[in-house]
Image 1 (cartoon, one colour):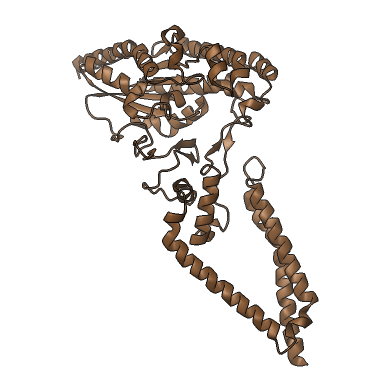
Image 2 (image 1 turned 45 degrees about the vertical axis):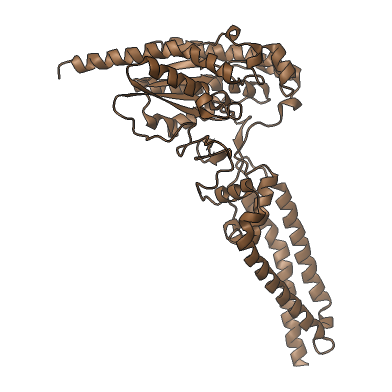
Length: 454
């Protein structure tokens, strides 16, 4: 009798443990799943946690309710349960060993890359995801990213061949900042065919100094990402000249509700911080396979939330009303600060305006934006005015170049703004003469400085 009572107490304890797990597991783990804006990061995982809670609570209740049946027939049922548990443990161990050896063969490359970046492992061999998150710049180009055929991004995160951060003596270094029309991929597959590379080759043929042009293009970057990138990274390249090819992506924040010049209404982090316990969980090769397929299914590890909703869901009349009434304060503040910091260091700048395709081309080739054409044109005009205003403010150091749409044939446009290789050549030609003049002035200033008595 005492033995039975003692075993009853053990069963009671086990049932209580299951019930407690069911009660406290949910709030304890969900607390780690809130993002900075107060929303839940992963609703599907929340659903799984609720299921686990429910099952755990039911198991605990059933053990407590039917504990007397566990000891019938000389504990046969209990022995079976122990055997099943041991069998499951052995099976999991066997699968874990298999997963260790077959992880690379059973998972897609983008999924494996996402797992490595998620864990903070910057493995140069795993470059399947071209954009990764950054704690201060929001997101960045993946170092050493390749599309499988061509090396697109170098080890520093730029669309160039590898180079030293320290500038070589006698070299004029030009930094180009911008969005996808600077980054140019996947529209231009080979690096040498981007307008930046074409421009570099033409300038080096005509300049008496070695000229290096660095492509710091970042897909869908607004002036906010350009500012963050400049403050935390680009300025340490010590460029002599900066080209800022912008004005297009900053139209988008004007189209969405609740405009904020800090773009908090428009863009936010994807909230990919590793949650409590996940690093330990991913020591299991089984879990790594599950996560790799999960990330692959999601299209990789999300780097940032680009906008609140797709352009197709925007009401054209509301978007038109917003862009007509909102002043692009965010664009002005961000661009002005970049120019201010650069000018204070003696850097010369070219503000190179965004090139938009003609209205009929956008309607024909871009189904996502065709209903927003009128709003886009107004937003671009406003951003051009901001660039002109900043040029007048810093006129000793800044040139504003507005690309002439008449120079670009309709067939050059792939969509609303991206160009084919012929279009890239025209874009490079527009900048060639102004850049040569700036380089000549830099050389003259350097010669005068050398001639001054020390």
